Image 1 (spheres, chains in turn yellow, red, cyan, purple):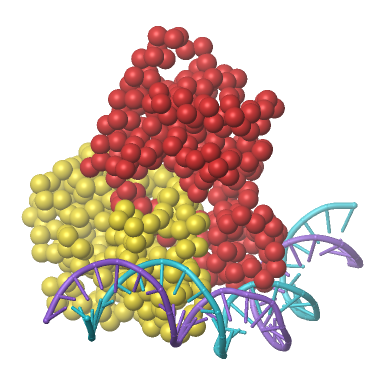
Image 2 (cartoon, each protein chain N blue to C red; image 1 turned 30 degrees about the horizontal axis):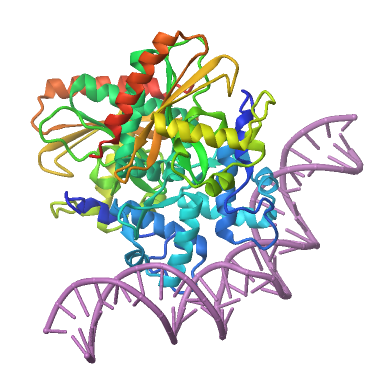
Length: 267
Length: 267
DNA sequence: TACATGTGTCTTTTGTAAGAGACAATCCCG
DNA sequence: CGGGATTGTCTCTTACAAAAGACACATGTA
């Protein structure tokens, strides 16, 4: 709660579609909600609060949490009656990284980029229909943009979002993007048609730049990483001050595109 | 299956205690088994094989896998009908790292150690009563010992195992260590009493060295990391050639202990 | 002292999820 | 080709997990 994770609140809606976790929910779904809730809050939560947070009976959450703690997916946090993610989840996550060439190489490339350019660099992917920062490397500027790996942001707010949706049917895009997503943080409202046009041009150009969308001080440069099948599987992007010169921006875009292309060459 | 992950087979027994996943199992338990099974096999598995692997009805596994894939905990692997860990698990894993000072700093320290010494270095913890390599950094030797993060090895096979069990009741230790665990890879058999004596001396000394236990060519040096409460929460260890000189070994142990002590100072 | 709020563990009840099995559609190998 | 194995989807039944709710025990606070 300390430092403004306001965006995280966006990812509140649980799995599936149904917002209200009604009565007599399947145990597994409860668990999925619990995990999502912990992820959204980014800190250990008391079991009572957890029950409230996922809107489930206390007794149920007690039994489920016990199972999860026994299994190591959750751990009791320091003071005793709070839970948070456990070692097992970390291990499974590492398994995922190991089995996923793109992620492994992408993380490295992003780290390199931020070291070389000094700017914040991110690896982004679609995660069940939402834009997700999969890995980010802070850069060297004094006020670093919060490096919230796993943060989910509405697709229309970002340059990467435009690239990730390239090649999708209009209907699919409409489905992924809610009305709320089209409202920018500063209150401005995008038109769906404009957004879809952006997507088409971004896809054709092979890169995308957005200025002052998420906040007024930054520009976002992004380049697509393609899968073997030719689909956009991820993007790498740089977050730079909005007043970065045309020339430098052009240079960075070229760099970004080169690195993205290298990532696209599947191992 | 390609490169000898023979040890991984050790971690076969699922959660709880019961080896045989009998009929009418709780859905959540099935899921826990699925995750464990994937972790043990370290590769994408077909749904049919998965059902066989966790000894569950096909129809059940189909529905569970669908839920898990929808939730992003699992992903369909390349060719279409195999599943493996998904991005969500990676994100949760990163949340764990972020929320866990010891792990975050420990990983760094281990990376430093292996860079400085050129030897394989590992961060180890108890994970639901089993010894687990939480992070490892390969070192620069020609034949690198497999850097299998998440690998679980019987406690008696390792130096770290002796340190991690320091301070536990005899009964607890007996409970954690199965008969099989006392049989070394080369067929030799440890006596439980000898092992417990090792634990006591290791705990008193503040470090532990084992020679030729897991394999005939390596020595394992380990030092304990303490929690604020004074319990051994983790170990860092170095894997060096068994013929490393007394002098160098002593030097490395001193280094290891210093770093471990530094990690013990809670942030 | 009474009164509210939170926690952890029970027992009982009942709605439903896990399981058995049947099905068509592929796949694969002799 | 042809038959045995595998895959993905369906339906129906009942065993059992999720929920309700009562309990005992802490807290804090008027």
